[in-house]
Image (cartoon, rainbow, N blue to C red; front, side, top):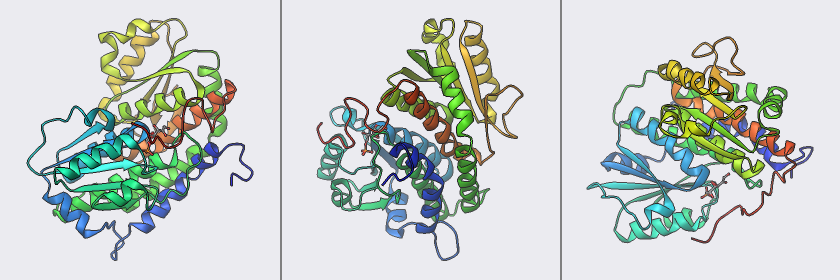
Amino acid sequence: EKGAYPHYMLKEIDEQPAVLRRLLQEYKGKTGSIAIDPAITRAISEADRLYIIACGTSYHAGLVGRQLIEQIAQIPTEVHISSEFSYNMPLLSKKPLFIFISQSGETADSRAVLVKVKKLGYPTLTLTNVEGSTLYREADYKMLLFAGPEIAVASTKAYTAQMAVLSFIAVAVAQGKGIKLDFDPVHELSLVAQAMERMIDEKALLKEAACDYLSVTRNAFYIGRGLDYYVCMEAALKLKEISYIQAEGFAGGELKHGTIALIEDGTPVLAFATQENVNNSIRNNVQEVTARGAHTAIISMEGVTAQPGDKIVLPKVHKSFTPLVSAIPLQLIAYYAALQHECDVDKPRNLAKSVTVE
Ligand code: F6R
């Protein structure tokens, strides 16, 4: 039930800190650190390469997950869109393991890949929110997202839960391999939950940003680099699907190779700048589009990348986990933009909650 909330989407956005805290409980080991099923850690450690397979928002969570798994657990990882992978399979490594990410566990495109790779005899792991769903039943290994039912068509809390569970995999496999982490994951992820809460309390600011940047426009750009780029892809998808504003998530450095031609007077360009190593370069990209008339805003991180004049400043979290916090403003901006455009937030046109056709 959505109770006092006007929309399920808003309720589900607000639930994200609680979902993250629940996940930290569900995946807690005896020593208080993160623990996952040892059989899963073993299977992943035996693989020479991981293949993450997903669609839409789950694919975007997979892109972030790949970076975490490669950086923290040091296992080469690829991410593929299910519907592309099915007929355009890349050359596989000798010992692949497949990770399916699916909120519903019923997505036909993802299931088609699962069936195919199982036939080839490869191990499979499903991350899903729905226990007993098709992808849950048919995979060798499974991990639940514990996000609770997600009713709004636009995925929000499942997205952050997926990134959290992928971070648990990265951490648990790293620990299993004896890789020393230079941070305490449980502590850092608790800080993430707090930071999410602080952003949820900034609804007035995010609503104002949506009004200011997105109320009259028909198109918009999100730009970022590294992890922020993946966040931008999700930000653009969320905006498109619920507000019908044509949006693109773009790698900051790639703009000048063509897309910058689309920038006109007043074109909204929102930049995520949470990563210290690319802070200067993404700000240069913002200048490039500002000089061509774009209406720009920077979303940065307190004590890391923030500078005076930034529109939205996120509380500081560990650099690997910034997408979990960025999720809140991107979702709320899309939500308020959709309200501005008088769209049916929970049931956008042409879309279904689970896509059971290929
Ligand atoms: C976007 C959205 C979709 C789903 C996609 C995959 O908000 O919800 O892009 O992420 O259809 O669905 P699942 O995760 O159920 O496989």
